Image (cartoon, rainbow, N blue to C red; front, side, top):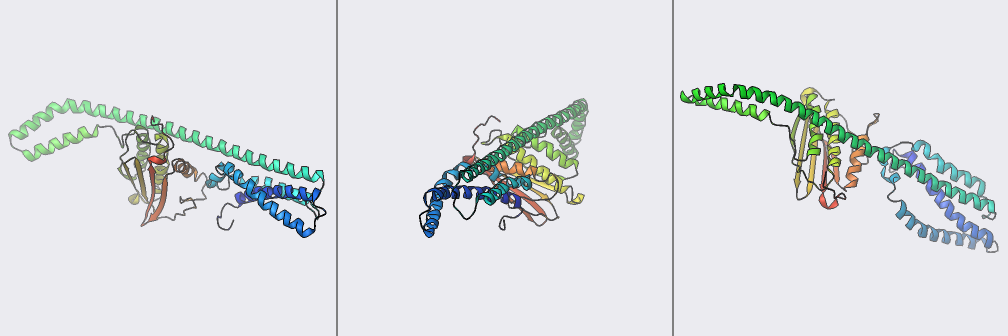
Length: 366
């Protein structure tokens, strides 16, 4: 509670579960001593109790930890308060209520005490199971939200590309119509040896043709959709975007996940940049793909204060803040990727590094 702060209610929930677990182990020893150890001297009773408790604790804890160590309850730290401020009362009050009623100066020596302890243990197990199921439901909802986001980005990308193609068709029709006039002017300039003007006209024609090309940031179509949508949003907010992106069509990770990572990171950069003066709005996106490793760096200008939480990502008290970060963290954990954030010289930077040998999704069809 003192070392890992800001999670008081979650600590209290785990404290209640640990208290119930310890009380249940104590009950096993206490039942034995209550029924069979009354004639043993008191100091020997305490010695037996302590020794048996430690042995049972070790024997039960090892298999129990293997079972619960991957529980979503431990992995959902960034949900912060969630409903911990209510749910912690269940195990804590169950343990306290049972201890008050069943603990006295005697060892457990009645069946009502035995049944009370067993029912308490069952109640705690059921509480843990219910909370775990709720977190699984929460994770599924997050996955559905991410999939909806992917579909939205692809739809927006298709709409944007359709508009670009429509505009390009108009430009090409005009260009074809004027091509005969341009060629005549160019021929005249060459005949009169006006080379500089001829070169300038050729350059203008080349720029016109270049502007009719579709916008492609990378070869991976899914990731390109996300980049197109959010970079377009940044440009609509008068944010300068400099990008150097190199990602092939086939990568060792699910392209949907990497697209969601880009979407959330760039969206956060756009939100932060919008809070800056227009002359200081700037985002830089740099990626490198080599030897089945993907490095991503997304930087944005930001002069405000940034507080990094224990996950290494920014924290805030604003409503709905942290949903995108939670999504990014789940992707980072899924592929055992490395991530880091820094804030220096007015630049906030988030970096990711993915390695192929840690990819647990070998479906390259995305």
